[in-house]
Length: 130
Length: 246
Length: 123
Image (cartoon, rainbow over all chains, first blue to last red; front, top):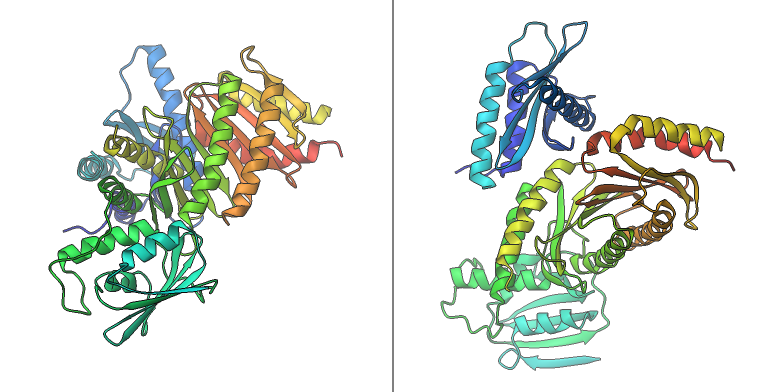
């Protein structure tokens, strides 16, 4: 039997993903930009990350609406060094959440691992917070 | 000023309840089969409990099974330390549950308890819900379901030195002032109030469909997450509201 | 005072359509700068009321042993109302934004502007 609470499992899930994929920071945030769960290397700021992620998500939603596009399931912001902020919005039980990871290495993969984490978040939510 | 008596006339649960409700500073010595337990009351709580080398909540759970013996109650004797953090009601609930489950180690378990304490089923259920919620909130310190009269309906605490009753009384004053101000400003219907201090986040969230009760949660500032706090509090406020009578 | 009003203008620009009102308020409840864009929101009344809220919050924080109060956030169905002590606590910064605002961003913005506002208050 798993002894960890739902919240602890979320934090561990993100920490494990960071370790496997080499992400310096990942956050699970609400649409208000407040952190629900996070895992980060020293010196990273999950609070700031969450706020920015929600801001990016909000802008993307407005852009999609104006262009008549369906909702995005991924929004990425690239910098000149090839570093990427990847935001994956999804909905559980009428709550819109955003999983965001910083992909530090150019061309590093993230899609499979973030898909897996979103799937696991849904399982944790169903188990602990239905 | 003191009082002496026999456990056949007044149970330990009754002694705990009365001294806590009266908010006495007092020392209670209880003698049973050659052993002596000492409880200290302060600020509406059991502050310290000792039996031989053992201290804390486990002592209380153990002695709640003592049906025979005598006691000495002395007012005004201060507690030498704090070893108990749960509210008196939570202590008695947990003690009753353990007696029922025969979970005590130090003494042969009695299958029939003659505790005369009447457990409030609603309080047991709400205490359980708060305990469950405590595991889900990162940096959790304490929580309570509070009436707008400032009295706890249920409370739970993990942190030493945190007095849920004192916090609830103070926070209710603040919440009432905030609610009144928001109403007079026409700024909408209040959902929650979050106070950030050096050391903590203090969240007060009205139970859905009612402004008679709120869920109060205290979280450590350094280790808590605001998103986690608001999300989990909102979920549990809905659960708690369904568990409330009426 | 001009410097203070200039900073307040910057804050209003950053918040855009989410902005409702902002004031720098002495603990006597009197606003020294700012204002509301909404005719439905009485900024002077809010300033006075939330000065009382912040005074009580400070006393409560002290009594429950949770430390000095930094800020108080009220969530209503229409708005977020944030009151934050600045400088030595002789003033607070009150900010009202719509529910559409990104709260995390607003909090970070308030962290960044607090010291500037305090420095700009004429003393």
